[in-house]
Image 1: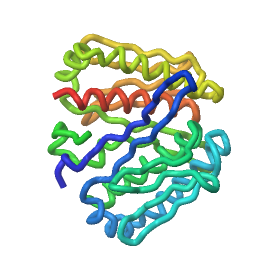
Image 2: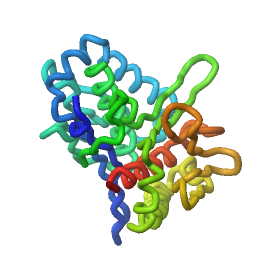
Image 3: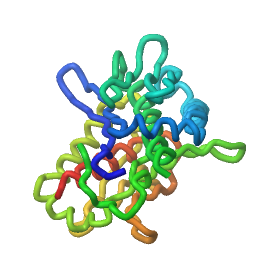
Length: 125
Length: 137
């Protein structure tokens, strides 16, 4: 795996007259379809779920609504749900936010970020 | 942004930033884990030339403004810069923060005296800083 696949995460903050908008930008590696089977085999899903549980235990409700994860056998983590109708969806290698407020964006960003780090680690080790 | 190759000889995953969580009977901690490119000192002068310092200071200000309702995000924060090392320290409150460390194999930001939630803003500031450094070729 070469470094060209690596994209650095970013929490983008735009300020305007109506206040600040927060946009998480987290991208999976371009060869992620190759990494996902190894990630699953090495218990990556269980580890990310545990990270989410610990995030809830430590942060509680201070950073938005409870989150839940949706997984796909081929694509790995495809959705981070926040509450009922908000979240991040994986599309074209990028986690795209929908209806996320600033608080929810932080939690969803951190979960997506942890997932990509573990995908790199368990998929390439 | 695709990264060129500052870390050719080392496993890639080491350089993906993370916010590690420790939760057990004794403690609950949030630990930022952020590495800089090994050649970061060569990048710092160009970073300054391109007004990178101003960008990061503005980012911190916007971050504080965006999350003004979260008390844990409102600890007094200050960025300390040096000419040759760039961002040397992110101070949080009186005793906490992230310090640039070069003691181990690769330069990184190490946290000290950070309580859980107030570890999050310096994580975003430090990763934004590293991202700007990586844009420098």
